[in-house]
Image (cartoon, rainbow, N blue to C red; front, top):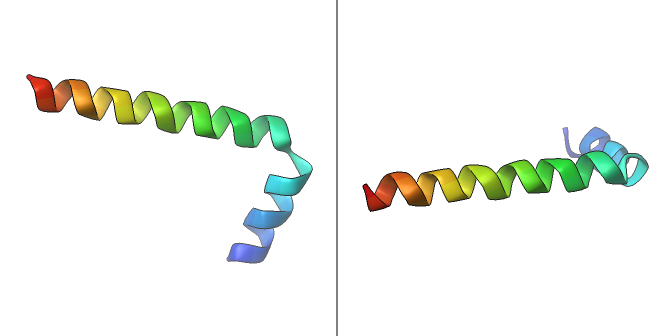
Length: 36
């Protein structure tokens, strides 16, 4: 499971950055929900 993930992560840096950005947005959404 981890080998393919690492392979794609090394091959597709842009996708990794995009995923990290999506994670940041999801975290922000969770924080805003907690505030309300």
